[in-house]
Image: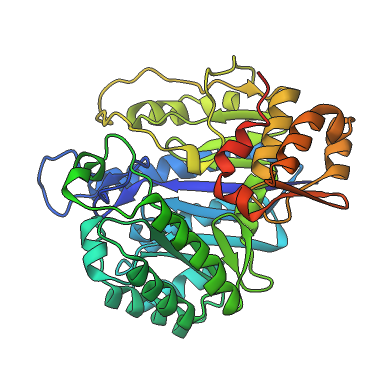
Length: 424
């Protein structure tokens, strides 16, 4: 059986963070007509999601699910009965491995101890908590809904109920952030001993409120941003975490299995609004528009979109959730929407080689010459010999037996290095 990973998109949040351009919508706390999602909207979406999961299952009878990731948005905003409906569909219609990793994202303050206990009974064995900073003023500037104290309460509840695999998300280069305040965040988080830490630099995305307000703040310089990155690796290494990907750190045995599927170009299928899939070198994405997604599911387009359908390739296919950053039209569900069957893109050999290199090099173990040959029937030097020689001479890549990986200097300018592997 082929291994398969499943991503489930829950596009609801309490409110949009000021830096966020993910496909998500704030929920309504009353009867205001503001375009926010109501409880009925959420229930309707869950029902569509459940239907999509069941209908697509026929395409994956020969696959074994090795990881499930519930992302968003804020999946922990779902009622537990809604979450159970979603997971039961997967358990009923898909074959899971004996040790399937099931991750759920959550924001501090959006769960109770009772909810967390139920998550464990539903099979969720890994949670990812979005802290971003231990400094409350920094959290306020980027529009987070919680304080550090709220995060601590959520983290401690998760430990009390029995979660033994917890990730904490951190961000650096925040407005008005100093290297000292960022180090304080690192120290506080490492002291808690989570099994996994993801640490990313803030990227100002055009169209977000923080992008529009950037002149109101002082941001760390490029050199300070680099110092924060180097500090992260050094400090976490001293406290038992190894960096296995450019921005991800884990204790021994706790690397994120789901994310490694993306970086190693494994098969994954995405369910929900705007979710992206790649199965057997074919890529497609669900409609990002609510009305069109509803019609997509109701009219059976889910089957033509899957790995056995026939569609023309899109101009710029998405690869994974990290590239799903786009704005969706808030069309009302009751409005008539034309069903839109996602276009499929058959990934060319050159595209496969490009992705093998620039995704694989994100990982500290790098890319394997033997695996390249097994996949493509050519030695890596036959395809990229000049590029490899150039980047090694520049001190950006290092060859170690069958492995080719980034040097520390190569990590600093990884965007330049990755671009060198693109075919003209």
